[in-house]
Length: 237
Image (cartoon, rainbow, N blue to C red; front, side, top):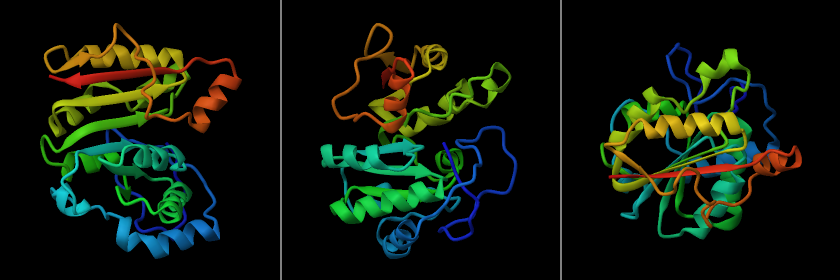
């Protein structure tokens, strides 16, 4: 999960401290095309943060099942998934300004109608804006692995965060995680297995990559480095 600190995006970064964050602050460069896409598309596809529950059907003007995607990077995979699954709506959240701009650009170029974009800390969005049982699915693909052991506590996929996500997920809904870092994959599996009363693994351990998930740049990079890729798909009982 990335972000940059330019003050030219729809929202400024959260300035307070919190126990869980869905991102790490990093520098980035907003291109003119990315900024133009935000300027021109935000009124149509952007959702500003506000600390109150929103009606996602009203946001999308659609009653399709809703999928939350946390940390979409440059948005390429998000756009492809939304085009592959036109019968679902996707709320895509990231704090990386260039990525937000690029996704807005892709939405315009491909005339994608089933994505809404937020630039905010996803943890706050989950806590304050999403109604219980409002989500059909949750996608978190290639979150920062924080591979140094002393940094493992910064990983997003931990029990406290999953505890925040589960009430927002409908019965029969799913959580789909993916990583190219084996040790993090094992941690993800352990975390989700700690909710046996609420979640059921769709596989014995790791799942085959669902057909709707395209290969991301992170996945391709991992394969070049000789890493494996692990998908986990759990359903809510």
